[in-house]
Image (tube, rainbow, N blue to C red; front, side, top):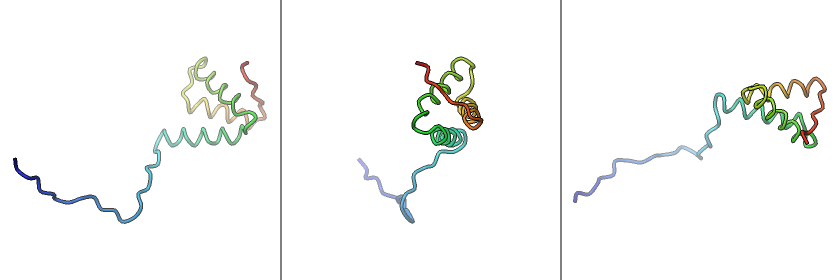
Length: 83
């Protein structure tokens, strides 16, 4: 059996930086963070439930549902839990 000769390796000029989400993933993450901040801890669960309702009943994509709830919160809407 022949020995395998090493030809090189990966070099780094500094610390590795975690890969940041790009495109639709990043946009969805930013929208979700904005929703969490806008809703606050007292309305977060109800806001999430409204996003889920819009996705299930209105067939909205996740980003559109989050943006819709964000717009409604900005207009003064108060979410109430489904329960």
